Amino acid sequence: MLRWLQDYPHFLEWAYRLTHHLFIWLDPLMRRIGYGRVDRWLRPLEEAGKRSVFDCQMCGQCVLHSTGMTCPMTCPKNLRNGPCGGVRANGHCEVIPEMKCIWVAAYERSQKMPIFGPEMILLQPPVNRQLEGSSAWVNMLTGADRQTPLGWIKKD
Amino acid sequence: MKPETLFKSDGRLERVLRSGRFAVTAELNPPDSADPQEVYDAALVLSSVCDAINATDASGANCHMSSVAICALLTRAGYAPILQVSCRDRNRIAIQGDVLGAAAMGVCNVLCLTGDDVTVGDQPQAKRVFDLDSIQLLRTIKIMRDEGVFLSGRKLTVPPRLFLGAAENPFVPPYDWRPLRLAKKMEAGADFIQTQYCFDLPRFRQFMAQVRDLGLHEKLFILVGVGPLRSEKTAEFMRTKVPGVIIPDEIVNRLRHTPGPRKREEGKQICIEIIQQVREIEGVAGVHVMAYRQEELVAEIIEEAGLLPRPLRIGFIAPDPLRRLRKSQEDPPPFDPEP
Ligand code: SF4
Image (tube, rainbow over all chains, first blue to last red; front, side):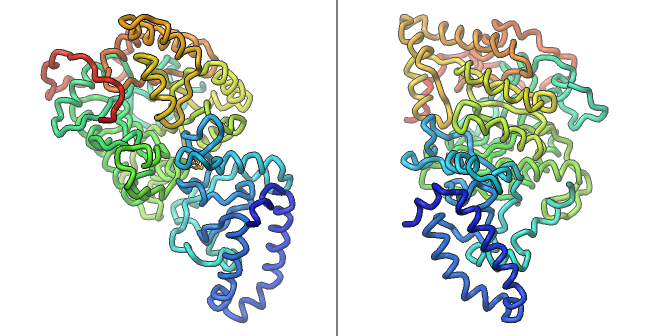
């Protein structure tokens, strides 16, 4: 559907920034309504939007902007820190030979992203599987998406 | 490499590497059998020619004896294994438990892998786990070792002492990002690296140049994966069926133009040449020799490449009480693991 948008990562990067600010601005209102209720309303909206552009898998802890505007959960191995060693010589996926490795695509896109491109080197913590299916937008406001396992934060 | 005052493990591999010697590791192919003797037969041949033995974790997603079990057998007989852990089959709870248990048995080295996908193995119907990825796995074990806690933050009474490894494949895209990903692995906690099979030397040289520019060769020990090809058929099989293996046409042609009975020799020769060439590259700390169910051949290669004697005295290897005499070596089975 709207997948062609991904070829303009710089535009998406701006769109991300805009939504980010918008939500932070709307945060007091959402808190008044109650995050639980907002989550119910927002989830279908978010899903429709992000699925059509990014094939979003609703992991509930979005890192799109740090991974070259490419959803890492679309990697069959769910890798969030870069490609596996099985990428084919033509840059296609080990598991699905017809598909371009999403990390090859992510790397190419990140090169065209002056704002968030450099975040590709960030170490992404383990996925919180409890958030699967919830709205990443709401989780961003409540901070649930940034909560890592206790042991993880101990060092640096 | 600057010497560190404190070693992270009590293993021989770490000591060999930190002393600046060229290290050799080899892969033990796990048996499809409940007989420990098959593990010991292979280990006996490998142990005299290498510093640590990799116990593979269902590599290629084919089911074999588990890596934890092989490590149990090996440590009990005084060998020094590297426990391979892949993220494909187990979640974070199982993995942390396995690592702790392995350390308790005397395992000093752990290699953290993503793991080949279930679809390439003999049971493609299986559910893939991939709860963690290899980098999160590295960091998780590093936290257990350095902070003495589980990922959950719960305390360990005695943390494991482990030398942490990771894999890298410099031979597949995205080429420019591979060195940066290596940096990420270092940041996550890797102490040593074992690479995928190296047949494409120009690509590897380029990769190492980038690695040196980033200064990673001073903080990581890089062991280059090598291995013999028995014939052009094996080569074809490996580059089409085994994920991530790249073999240039020249090497396949060289084997194709060798008469039948000499192919094994020629494959061995190619491997030895590659070892000698990667040895010259700055930043290479050792080699990792892999050959599917051909331990004798691995031993010959290491010997003929001039990597012997291994400094046996560096880590004391206890005499093996369980060691029985090796059965006479039959012809190695063909590489193709499919029925
Ligand atoms: S090849 Fe790329 S998309 Fe496919 S499993 Fe590996 S990292 Fe994921």
